[in-house]
Length: 144
Picture 1 (spheres, rainbow, N blue to C red):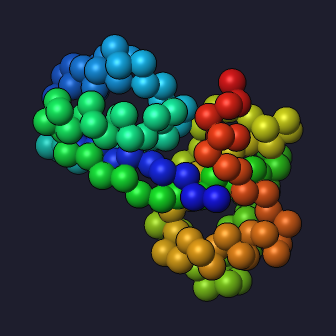
Picture 2 (cartoon, rainbow, N blue to C red):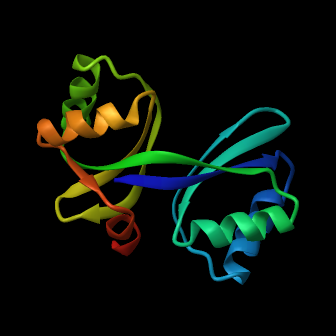
């Protein structure tokens, strides 16, 4: 149930993000989710792509610093308080959320939230036992 996410350091200068996106596009790599946290000198771009291994290879060949981490993709009811249900289950199990982000693809009447937690194996168990639907990589990249 883990989703492989790429994390890339990107210089905080004009045009660098466009160059990054162009590189992926020219290599037929689709970003299905993306978030950026920035500082004054660089940003950390986190993304789910349709071909993680190819993206890592292409990015490293272009001298980007890239790592792969595992996150969880969770279908959350797209309504007020929907996210709170999943977060409360993690809280009650003593699991910390390191970060999360959403993306625009939907699963029926649910949105998709990507979680990075300090104990992902335990989080999977908590979500499964709590009726929170986890999505596979194939499910995540197939929604358009």
